[in-house]
Length: 151
Length: 151
Length: 151
Image 1: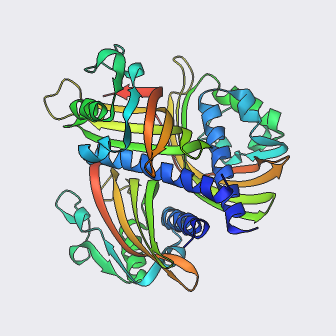
Image 2: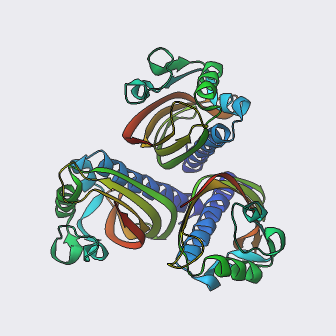
Image 3: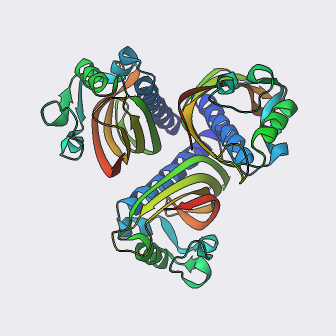
């Protein structure tokens, strides 16, 4: 790939991740599902410990873009959420494959009466991307944490 | 436009928005005014409800780059502010026109004795840009909110 | 430089700064040192007032990439830290030199028993970069603050 093609892939992947965040926080679940490949794997197993206290799919690993959207909607569909990504390190390894690391921050506020109140967390996404039919999508997402606070 | 020209426009618009934030938070109001077209429209009408409680221009819509800078200076000139933009989705629709969505976070701390104490908010900017005389500027800005907290 | 070369430099510098943050927050001190030129200068003298209350190198100015890594490791090696950069304004002034301004936010949580509890700050990095042997590194870093809170 020449420089312009590689830079275009990097920018397209940044905008893909922007849609991921925007669809999640505005609860556009069809849009959210469309940011993943049909065989995508989401690994948030690190969230599933005693501290997180959340409802978990088996081990926090979910396969398939529709199952991922269902899992996330089930977890935060009625939660006011703010998710921000920062400082991407995107490596385009071929014209149709790339990896990325993103710094992240999330703020969750559960509705009144829910068992949880508020969460504020920080960490990194470790991701893989594939280009299919001219569009980049997330094929793998794994979340690690630097810090999580509950209130 | 070829890929390099489109990517250059995207980067130029990112730096335009960076100046917008930096001028606002460092209170460089001449610099701030210069980031908008002379006929720019800022729509923060969503801020003008009972909750925001702020002083409002009529309906929160301000027209013209100098009026926009005056409006913002009047609102936050003596407030310690931190504004951050994240995850831009910039679409260059012609060599001189573009649209963008940005995730945002703002933290305001009013001076001692002011009617308000602190505000911490999250939302999205929905923007339009125009290139005039070789430089991109904001021609339209509308702010929507995910969450706003007062303390 | 043509547009593609300039944009590639900008993206490379963004990824350099991403490694700076990731290495600092994951405590990869060899990786952290490698993001600076051997003669780099870090100026955090603004942190060294009474308010910061921190242990300081003379005047907060540190010279040399290894000394910088040692200084930062000494300051925050056992502190849970989250550092985010935002809204870069990177100006590539030659094929091997560039300047940049970044908005930043940092959250520090000291271990139990430490004299300090938590810090949450906001400000800007003012930086210079050099390309040596095909890789961009930070040659100068100066931190200014918009707001710092202790808890």
